[in-house]
Each structure stands twice: as structure tokens, then as C-alpha cells.
Image (cartoon, one colour):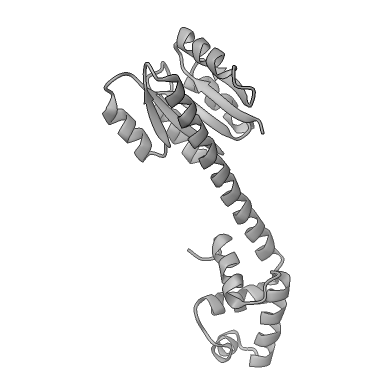
Length: 203
């Protein structure tokens, strides 16, 4: 499985050296960017991947790029690269969502280990996103009244209470409940609730 790696660093010798090093791994597809601004201009069209992000750059800084990735909800996992001793900045970056940080000059094996860890996290993020999308698509198949009944069930209400609030008969509530269970391809109420929560139907 190919793994996308994006190097964002305005130091050309460092950028080229890092790219040459990573290109030795056949599973890595490495792209480099000479500034945070260049990366952000193309980020929306890039495949999910791991971003090796220098903190101090001309123009958009590493923190600016990290914030933009979060704001745009891009499928990227960031590893911050800092100068020696810049631990405070690294901590700030991790609090902002970076998975890890490396100090220059970084050890080769530590670099690869960190990238592999970031790739594992990326796979988890993609799997979570796929689950959310599937749940949203399932909920979208429900009719408005079926969603009303589901919301009542989420609130822990019994059929009679839901019927009273919706001004329909308890028997009709049972029909809607059976229909929504069928459309969601579930047999139990907890399974239906899990889909509702995954879809963001409730906070």
C-alpha cells in the first residue's frame, strides 16, 4: 500500500535531503513544498497523507498550516519538525492536533517510526470518516416522520409518549419504528442509536 508523504519546509537543502531519504522507501510517495503557502494552495486536491511540517517558514508558518488543515478538515496527519530545544512550540503544535514532533537533526530510524505511527493514525481517521459517511447515508434514507420517531427513541421515550407528542397512534409509531429499523439494516434499538450518534444526528 502506497503512503503519501508531504514535506513542507522552506529550507531547500533540508527539503531535498529529506525527500531523497524517504524516496528510498518504495511504499512512500513523497512530494515536497517550499512554503506553507504553496502547500495550502494545493492541499485541497491532495490525497490523504502525512505532513512533515517545519515550524519556522517565511509566509505561512507551520502553526498556520496546522490550523488551516484543522479548519478545512483535511485528511492529513501532521508531524512537526522543530529546531533543537524548541520544545514549547512542539507542545503547542501537538495541542493543536499534530501527532508528534521531531527535533533537527533527527535520527533516521526515529523519523521512519514517527511516519509509520502517523500513517497508522491516518488509517484510523479514514476509517472513522468512512463510518460517519455510512451512518449519514443510512439516516438520509429515513422519512421525516421516521426521524421524528428515532429522535424520540434516542430521548428514551416509550411509544405512547412519542405517539402523543407527534399526534399519531402508538400503532403508527410501531410501524415507523419497524420501517426505520429495516432501512438502517439493524435488528436492535442500540444498533440504530449507534448509527444515529455516528451520523451526528445528536450531539
